[in-house]
Amino acid sequence: MVLCGTLFRVSAYVLVALVAVLTFFHLECQKEKEADTGDSKFNPFDPKQTDTKDVPLCFCKKGDVTILYTGFEFILMQSAPCALVKLVSLIRGMLKKQEDLPDFCEQNELKKLVNITIYDARKKPPGTFHESGFTLIELDKEPETQDWRTSSKQKDADILKFFDQMEPHIKWLYPDAKRIEWTHNVVRGGDRFGDQPKALKPHMDYYQDDDARLEFHKDRPVFSPDWLGVKAEANYLMGEMDRDDSKLGALLGIWKPLHPSKVCDYPLAVMDARTIESDEVCPWKNSINLGLLTFNNLASTIVHSPEQRWYYYSFQNTREVLIFHQYSKGKFFSNPHTSFLNKNCPEDTEPRISVEMKLAVFF
Image (cartoon, rainbow, N blue to C red; front, side):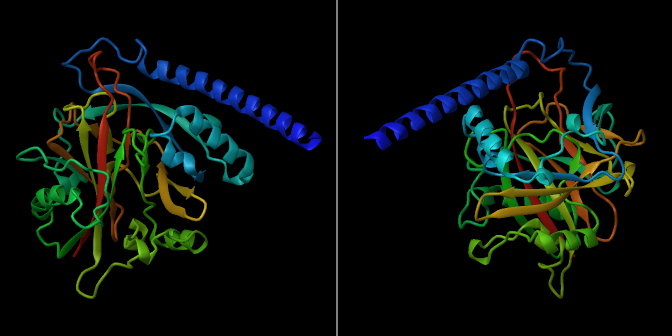
């Protein structure tokens, strides 16, 4: 009886503490939500002014190395209650090693916020796809695809309809391509399990130094087990998908809105690939630890330079698809990218939900 009483009291103390922590996190989440949706989110809307000025973005400094080590909260943050995500993050933070703590702009003196201008590419065209690295194509009709989440590696996946619709445009951009392979697809801004949040700092999904990537994956292997039938982009970048008659030439990013019909608040911005130098990137070591599975990737954060030129497409609609370079074999030609809060939007603007895909092009 004494033991049962002790266990009951301990359980009660733990429950009270858990409720208190969750309540605290709930209040924090409410404050964050109010800050994101409050009256001060948007300025008075001016439809003629689509270039966005004084957008604060987080950049690294030369020599910086960013480490991002995260866990289950990464795949829960869009679908699970905010307070629960914060609790999982707290527990993981108490258990992980200090050197694995993520670096954020406000926490690291090597990083800095810089106010930049992002030009409307509709009004100030930056050049052709092969000059700037990116372009916007307009589909002749709305995609038939409804399920954007199921992996394209699954037989009869609904997203394959969209791939069929896109491939003529890709072949027009790359008439000499011998084959193209779609890798993965993910929804950002949605509220379902596996959806990811909007990316809010300038980055490249892949570090452009091939030797550095090989070295990184010696200690942090690529997760692409044969039983899943899926290969990670790193497998492509390290030449594992090359054939005797076709070698990887480029890895493209494909981005389109899903909701609303025209995006305003968090559009995707891309940098003109001609305006960044190879020494203006910093390695960004990513690990997502899911217990038995760990996903590793070597990405890049960006060093700011006044020579860099950023662009977006104002009010991109659901029939328009942004195509840009994630990686180019044998040359430094890639488009850093980020989403950003565009304060020049109508008050009734709805949060955007988008889908992104990656496409390997072989020559």
